[in-house]
Length: 165
Image: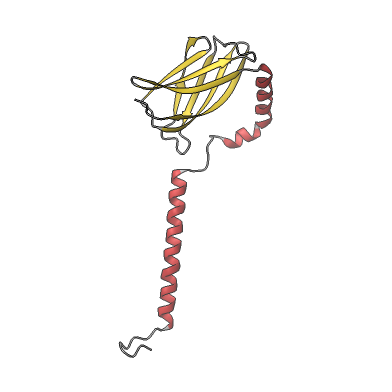
């Protein structure tokens, strides 16, 4: 008992302090969990279950692509209105591959808010260019598919764009 103020700590005071403390801890944890799930829901690929079921088919396609020997490189290029995405296709011997059709998507790794589909135009000598315009600076992932009558190639590239103007 505190004799100066006449206040005495009783059992219900201790219970109230414990409930307030743990209530605060639980509230903070719930807040962090909600923010984490909203910022990254955990599913990076749509229909991941179906991709898992078709995994053997995917492995077979990758074996066929490896035997074909195609190679792709990608990078951003600064232009007056923002950025272009350039892809260079070559065969096993390093010869350029012309006449392919390339489709793809550039993805911002942490959210799909900035993701966009890309279409490429052939520029000759194995070069293909997609005009992106304004682009958020930072890390990007390209997932693309190149196809020609003699074969196809699925490829990915990790790219960094720093607004270079």
